Image (cartoon, rainbow, N blue to C red; front, side, top):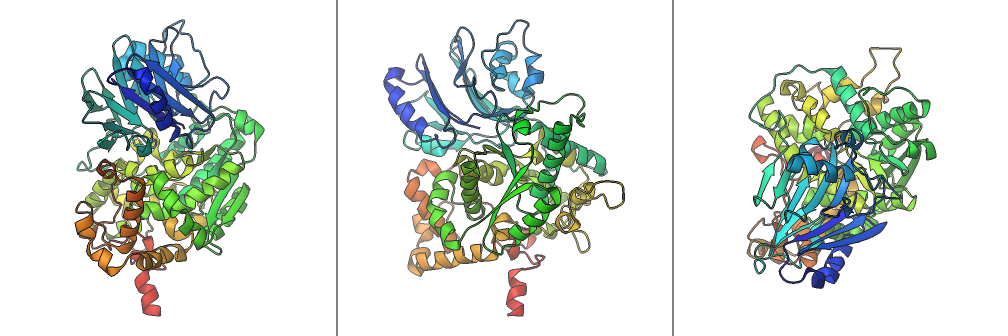
Length: 570
């Protein structure tokens, strides 16, 4: 992934704004430290900060067609780019090996519909100078980040950027560009192009669970995400989701090395150069000394025979990083900051090893109702509606965390659970199969899909202690004292008098705890403009289900180390 910045329809001389545009784009350089590019065309500017992963030697951006009438700045990866190249007009000249260049050429024949054919994670801005037209699009779930802004003193001018920090000094209105949508300046409208069968959360599916289909769909999703020309690894917390992705990645890597025909026989886009140069899968974990995640990750890594890298941090390390985490994450959401801090620190270690891409396990909890508060779902229909809502809002929470925590250090995170084809399978399962209750763990059907205990000849995907491990939210699993210390620190930092005036200071989205007050204050220091809060959405469990407002998994009664259990045992 990379960083993109663009301005459409600047008033006056766009060349005079070039240096300012370069300065704003530079704020995104942590996302793309490998090269920078800037193109001015008429009264429009497109900039790019590149993280080179595919087409390393020839994929500098912004990309242009032969006569430079089409200009493209992209953040992301297009996994089906090889198949899409075959759809281009005969004689099409590709100037680079970039997986993204195909967007330019298909636009010439498809127009805005090109976005419907893309399989990947992406945000892009395409300028058609002949038509004085700009298109901007974001991937279906919002794995990549994209913001759109306006300045009331410049009517008709539109700004785009990968992160808020490139817009907040220029715009007095900023939104998170909606995932699965495309903006077209010809119509002035932003329309949804992503229309899966499961999008209506009130429409309850009735498909019986097909364990084989779930397993094979996820394996295909992992394999296509091995497309890379640089060394890659896996984030391994020791929980079910990351461990499954690591297990599948290890198997698929071995298939590539052995030359085995892949499961997706209809063709894949895997570039094997990274596997050839670093054939043994590397895994990475982080936690406080003695944390549950570190212990579980060790077990999983040993079982999978990965080259495992374990890092510990102290509570003080984490506290020292909070301000930087808020700056990079551009949110004041409590659970996002709690979980992002260790991920942010781990990403720095990963980048220091020369790794630019990692696979991660985000999305499974939203898809399968894996958060412990889902145990309180009143009915299967309620559970399904909530899973659809959570998936739709991932771009405000876990996708934002996975993207910005890693990209703060120029590391790209890929999330197989959010593959379009896998979502089509998993989101259409009868939600009765996803219900959790005594004797049936959360994400039971996902665990069962990879449970080989009924076939003694099959190679297990994971040891039972990992496959059937209770859900730990990342901010809990890195060490229970992490959240406890954050709460204590907030109590010390925020006085009762200050907290009592929270509603007067922030009448909109008022902090409900001292921890939330602390993060909001730090956010305001980095982003003081009123426009910056419109893109922030807080993640909280369902209070109307009787769930505590604290987003920690330990706040839920079903957790093995629940707060109320600890209190009763004290």
